[in-house]
Image (cartoon, rainbow, N blue to C red; front, side):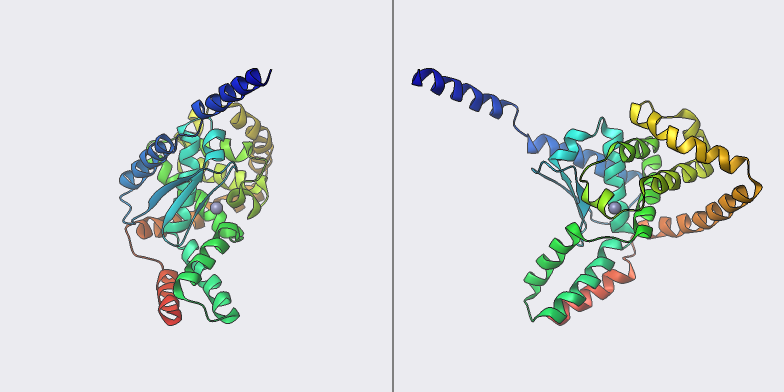
Length: 270
Ligand SMILES: [Zn+2]
């Protein structure tokens, strides 16, 4: 009897290994998408892509210009288009200086708290960043930045809506930080409609996107039926268009003002 149990145990053990996480393949997949987005957008940042063997549905970007994608998220996305939505969103945080800004705020707090070494400081900030709440506006901006990057790289930007609508659990960056789901969906949808109407007409073939439309369509109909709401929408989109041009310049490589602050603070602490 014992032998049978042992054999069974061995079998299960090797089975679990056979389906084990292949970090090399995962990294290759994430790198391929990330590099494609970098190249297509002529992005002058040394962004590195990493994967992490954690079950959470999560991804984040940090001050060292690294984008981390967790195993849980890789298993959760339906296709590369949705994964590109996450990766480009995280890249948006780096390019728009959100991580550096958070870093400066983090260093400020850490420096007051105690005298610690530069290395400790950086790690404290790194940890803080993984769970810190980025501002709502930063999330909106990262989404739209991501949409622009996806388009240039040949991905369907509606995949971002598809994934966002699907996530209901514990995606730290996308959810905890987070303006309400509907606002976020509308922010992306309206932007795509105004700037890339041909892409919108093409649609996206997923259940989640279809379900998202059940939330989105009533808002669009309401807006189209109201002159006041239409005006508000047009004004908002014109404002966003100016920001889009600013962001395009940022991609060409000038670090944000926050990067400068962060470097100075690091030097002061060392
Ligand atoms: Zn985010």
